[in-house]
Length: 292
Image (cartoon, rainbow, N blue to C red; front, top):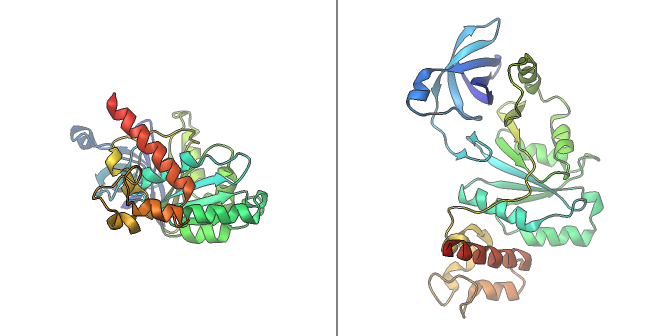
């Protein structure tokens, strides 16, 4: 049987098989010998030990199309990042760092600005201007009022999505609105874990419908960019791409050089000033890090 790992904890892996249910599985020793660790999100083959007890052995891990380290999850189709428009005030540098990380791993991003009822029309328009050319899909929602939820559900359908965002932005309310309180397979995982064998909180996929999965991640307050050279940072700002070959100098950093098409676009309002200023800040941060 083939299924998807929903949660892994204490040496047990909870594998959901469409139309069959959730199985508690142990991984075969061959994976340890090959230094392969099953990840949440992995597609796997299992041998069923007991259909009644819903237990089995994990025997094959299918090839991964991608893998995130934090959180540890495989085969992600997209990321959903949720920020509030107010209460708390959005930390745009944190959001931009997240977008860089996802761009580096070629994972599409949906930006959901929640608590839209707290924003003026002008504020919403500015957010759209700032992020409309960032390569992301931008939407506004009010989880409490149910606004924007149908569009969000449509964007999630048929995909495995990792959800992230700072504390207090309404992730739980959004999740409850998306799942309509059902969270169909999480209850089965929770019942098994209640046996007392596992207590640690780990990443977990939530089954929302056919081929539709969502992973909630802990709130984050800081992200450090690693494994990126300052010279490559510009490639992770998609809005720069249209001007990349129009600069006077090849390899233009878009900061100090004359004849820079990106700076010209900035002056004409075709590139977000907030996003550009964050680019400059992060460029200098990466430059300073290399000195040490």
